[in-house]
Length: 140
Image (tube, rainbow, N blue to C red; front, side, top):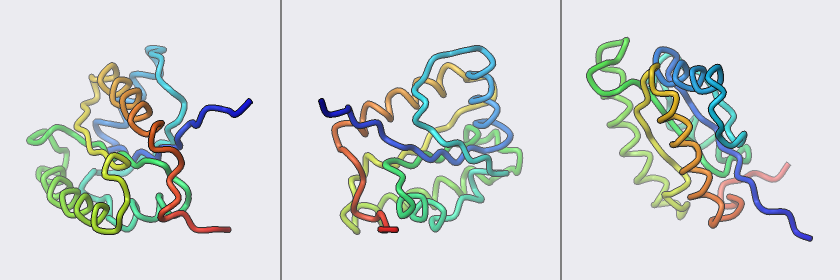
């Protein structure tokens, strides 16, 4: 019997908000799929498009970038820079023929563990029908 596809998600999480939100979900024992590999970054504004495309090349089926809500950035304007950069990444993803549903940006504060779990659950459900990402994956 064929096993159901379980997507691998790489999540770049802002240290000050989104990573703390994922920690809150964990310590509160909220249930969400174990499909996420979290990578803590100092700010969502520090996530280079190269990080995103490298994650896809290394086998990610989906990539999430999550940071503080606009106006609440620890570094004043970092999330505004991230939002601008992410808009360009979305265009590049579509240009190269990768399904745009494989990439997501979300704002999650340190107090929003429940929201973080919902974002992960929704993302996994969006990725399952797409199947494994093979467009950018490098063969080893």
